[in-house]
Amino acid sequence: MRTGKLEQWLSQPPRGCEETSAEFVLDSQDVARALGYARGSVDDISAHVSDVVATMEAEAQSLIRPRWLWKPFRGMFKGDCCIVNGSTPLVVGDQIMAQLKNATAVVVYVVTIGEALERTVQERMYGGDNVGGYVLDVIGSVAVESFADRLQELIAGEVSEFGLKTTNRFSPGYCSWPTSGQQELFSVLPEAPAGVDLNASSLMIPIKSVSGIIGVGANVVFQQYPCELCSLRGCHQRLA
Image (cartoon, rainbow, N blue to C red; front, side, top):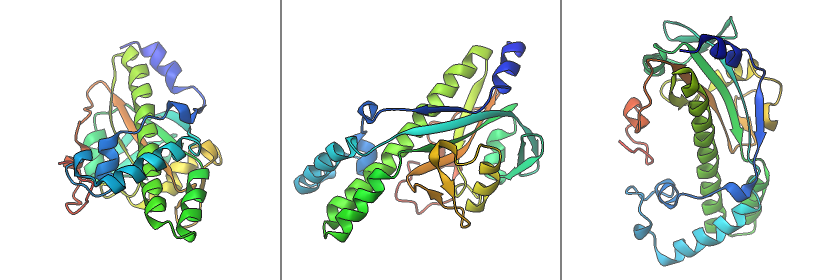
């Protein structure tokens, strides 16, 4: 392990990035699954819905404004808590801690696609286009997760230079980590990271945003199907 470079990496200030929507490529299987087609196959989608998806995807290109901000921290792990920034406990729960326990560091991040798509969804809904508004909303959810995956790939590439790996990314509201955990998560980042605010109910604004942590270490494991970690058996997006 290149310890000196790792320490330098850990000491860097928060890093942000703003991408263009032109770089957004929609995964049709992800959209099909998010629309409730369990097999995630576009062949299951009716011709009408397929046409709506194509139209909304084209519209989404002009509405998505991807931004992210992330910061690595030396991690300390105790019980069901991941302690970052020296003293801030993130009570992530036993399921996530089982994946983080071998980590030496964690990355805290926020990703968003901005507010424009959300406003258009509301306009379509209020205008009576419930199908188009719903499909556009689903595309927005798929898009923000796609950009969060892209961020994870970037981080995995960087830490591989130190001989390290990453875990899956984990977010408040999943795997027994309460949504209220957003408050502690946001407290270790600059105010309104990537332009995302947090209200008193721990709801991110814009809504199409994702926050969370990624474990980093020599002995951590990335699981291709993270649903195996989750106890929410009734989730329609479950992969395993």
